Amino acid sequence: MAAGFKIAEPLEYHRSFLKENCRPDGRELSEFRTTTLNIGSISTADGSALVKVGNTTVMCGIKVELTNPLVEAPGKGFIGFVRVHQENRRRPASQFIADVIESSEVIQTEDLCIERGKLCWVLYCDMMCVDYDGNVLDACIIALLAALKNTKLPEVTINKDTGAPEVNLEKRKGLNIRKHPVGASFCVFDDSILIVDPTAEEEGLSTSHLTVVTDEKARLCVVHKPGGTPLSAEKLQECIGRATARQREIQKLVDKVIHSVKTAQ
Amino acid sequence: MMEVCGSTNVSLREFGCEQTLLSRPDGSASFVQGDTSVIAAVYGPAEVKVSKEIYDRATLEVLIQPKVGLPSVRERSQEQCVRETCEASLLLTLHPRSSLTLVLQLIHDDGSRLACFLNAACMALMDAGLPMSCLFCGVTCAINADSEIITDPTAESRALMTFAIDSKEQRVMMSYTKGSFSVHELQQCIAVSQKASENIFQFYRDSVRRRYSKNL
Image (tube, rainbow over all chains, first blue to last red; front, side):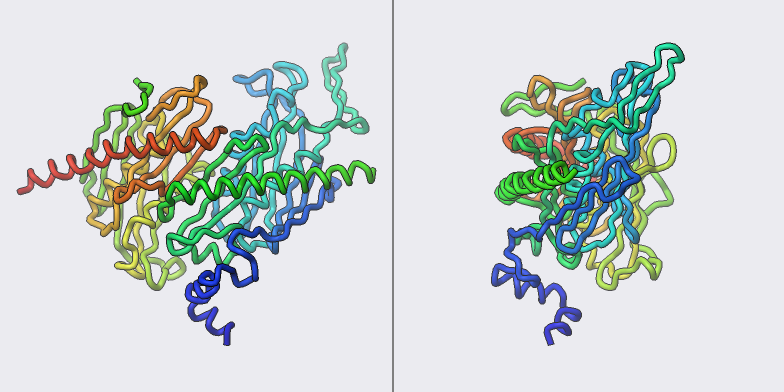
């Protein structure tokens, strides 16, 4: 009976739950789904992470390569492509993640420079959404952060005689992660009800989406609201408050997992 | 070119607009903000491909063409911002199973590109006579190294934000930000953008009034 109602009138089905201040999967309006994190599972990548937020699963792999620095920035390395692979959708998540990296200054590009004007590291980030159940942007940011923390750069010395770089794959040191940006996505139902961490169905039925990315100093890196119905200032403030709380939870989770990987090695 | 705004003073560059400049599309407009210039063209309501049709609403498609080269991921993300803003203000349910196409061509970029796209899109939709529940405008705000807030910036800054404000209640419809900033700075920028949007809506009113008074 309920299954039939859900297919015939999905919006009314969701509204009947929202009236009772809860959602079809039993969550509160401001509750995030369980987040699980696995680091370093891809041995061929220099850094990797697998994140599951509810059913949404995102895999991130980072590869580093040596290259010449860009002409206009001889003292810095750079981030190469950031690609988010998601089938059936032309969603511009790739641009969003590239903006997050740049706006949050999660890594300082000066750290990627080996020899000014001659040699630097370039990072290629690839993200694959293995299972889509809404809120892929948050999962991508968490995966990216964890993968960057997991990335180890091999030691490079420049041979004085030949000028060629010598890479020592055995000795590696981690990237210097300066900030920890974490995102929280919200969507608005019927112009008034705000829900956190939407599933794919809820995303499809909502009238507007919002993603707020904050770092540990409670500074906002990205406030991404790609159109949709207008949002009032109080609701925006509420979202920012919730995002800051989420940032602390996720940072603890990532640190815990990194620590456990280190002690296991 | 750009000016720093005080507590109640908001300044934008000169803007100019021309409607119905193209003959083939159903609606077109060009919007100029300082040196940044965009042309928008609207086609519709028209036949829609069965794969893209929605049974109870019109399907809006936005295409952004950069000045040089092919559209890239950055244009896709701007298209999403413009499309969802337009979908929220157009009365799409009046044209079910139809398609609306909005094409935006960047002529020259001197800062405030996304805001200029939004303004040109709104004027073109009005020119096409499509029913809308409210008008919207784009305002760009930047926070420079001295933590001053500047509207309609042309130079580099610590943080850059573009907002789409609606005309009914001056609320934020769309937000796109780059760089990091505090919550307080965000609130201030939104307040400044809302003030600046009044100028832009007044400009819309004046240009439409001027155009239709000639016809009479």
